[in-house]
Each structure stands twice: as C-alpha cells, then as structure tokens.
Length: 254
Ligand SMILES: Cc1cc2nc3c(=O)[nH]c(=O)nc-3n(C[C@H](O)[C@H](O)[C@H](O)COP(=O)(O)OP(=O)(O)OC[C@H]3O[C@@H](n4cnc5c(N)ncnc54)[C@H](O)[C@@H]3O)c2cc1C
Ligand code: FES
Image (cartoon, rainbow, N blue to C red; front, side, top):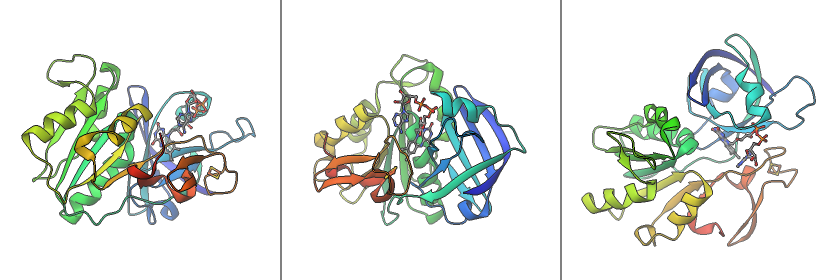
C-alpha cells in the first residue's frame, strides 16, 4: 500500500472529490486504471474498495466517488491532511491510439472518461463527450465533461431539467449521430451502468465499430488473486481487475 495524502476535498452532491498527493500512483497512472482504497484503519470493513482515477498530474491524482454504502461513507469522513492508503494504479487502461474519439459516460462512469478526455486533449486528438445522469441530483457531474476545440459535448438527464437534453446517453448518441454521422475511424469509449452498456452493445449504430468499455465488478484483491471479479466473456472468463477493467465491448457476454 502507498500512503496518499489528501490535499483537497470537495463535496459535489452525493459525490466526494479528493485530490491526493502520491507520486507512486500519480506518475504511473493512465486513463482507465483504478486504485484499491483502504476505507478503515481497522479490519472492518475488511475489503479495500476499487475507485477509478479522475486525473493524474505530476505527483497528484484525484478520485471522485459516489457515497453508496459503508465503505464510501467512511471514506467521505476523511478530511484534507488525512492519509489514504491506496494500492495501484491497477488494471489496464484505455488505448490512446484513436485518431478521433467519442466518449459515452453514464453517471459515475464519467470518472475514467474525464481522465481519458484530458489525455486526448493533451495529445491533440479530437474528442467529443456525451454524459448522462438519471435525475437532477446528479447534474453537478456536468462539470467533469471535457471538450476540445474540435469536439462536442452534450450532457443529458433522464428527468426533465431546463436547458438539458432529456433522455439517456443512448438517446443522446442517436441524436448526435443524426447530426454528426460517426466517421469510420472514430473510436468509442464508454463506462457506465450495466443497463446502458448492454443497450450500447446491441445498438446498430455501434455494430462492427471499435468500442472500448470499462467494467465494474465487486472486487476483493484488485490484482488477480481472489477471483471475485470473474465475468463471463466470449473467450471464457475474465478477471476484470487484472485483464480489465477495459476491454472490447464485443467481448462482454450480457
Ligand atoms: C474498477 C472499478 C472502478 C470504480 N470506480 C469508481 C469511481 O470512480 N467512483 C465511484 O463512485 N465508484 C467506483 N466504483 C464502484 C465502487 O467501487 C463501489 O461503489 C464501492 O466499492 C462501494 O463501496 P461501499 O462500501 O460504499 O458500498 P457497499 O456497501 O459495498 O455496497 C453498496 C451498494 O453498491 C453496490 N456495489 C458495491 N460495489 C460495486 C461495484 N464494484 N459495482 C457495482 N455495484 C457495486 C453493492 O452491491 C450495494 O448495492 C468502481 C468499481 C470498480 C470495480
Ligand atoms: S478482485 Fe481479486 S481477482 Fe479480481
């Protein structure tokens, strides 16, 4: 475990953003990777929790997590100056060889895609980003959408909110593709809830396209030993922590 020091904390609705200092994580992290975070100094809860990396630069990195249960509630109590034991960066990352990219984020799936969009922007690769949330309690996630000069951004909400596109990310994709037909070379990157990913996997617009997805699973170790993150794929079973979390959408069995 590395000892990261929390240097900033922001409460963003039901989400908490921590900025941390830890050269070992920050200097090696690539978009799509995650860290296993210890949520308690005691053995209760016993398991570390996986969290994606929001960005990394020099000796700093950031996490953005939704408070959903015991572990994330304990994490949310930490303050600036506290130490956060983290293991990582773990897993693979998104490929960075696209000549243009379209990023589709659902809810907290925005975390790793925010990091990817920042990296594409640095590399001068045109990137467009569509991000969707379920209801108005999550609209503050809009601040994590990145756009570069040549790309487009669209934030949508399933609940009607004035000024926002109403619908799911899949609805937004259809609207977007009607106005800006997807170039054959555009690579699609996605992360979000299972329902959204399943719909995308079956969507005719993405058929025969290169689509990379970052998957979530319940995780015990985070590095390929405990088998708790096994998921059926077209190749048999994959361990999301060590063979993922990023893989081709077409490899996933729904
Ligand atoms: C590779 C990876 C990256 C992740 N990145 C982020 C991130 O950047 N930000 C973020 O907010 N969350 C992220 N998650 C999800 C996060 O790990 C869980 O929300 C967290 O572990 C819940 O811990 P808890 O103790 O608060 O909740 P628990 O009490 O353990 O669970 C609360 C509820 O959340 C569900 N849950 C717990 N873990 C997961 C999971 N891995 N996938 C789906 N449902 C789960 C449980 O079934 C339960 O219904 C990521 C998960 C993975 C595998
Ligand atoms: S979390 Fe232990 S093998 Fe993947």
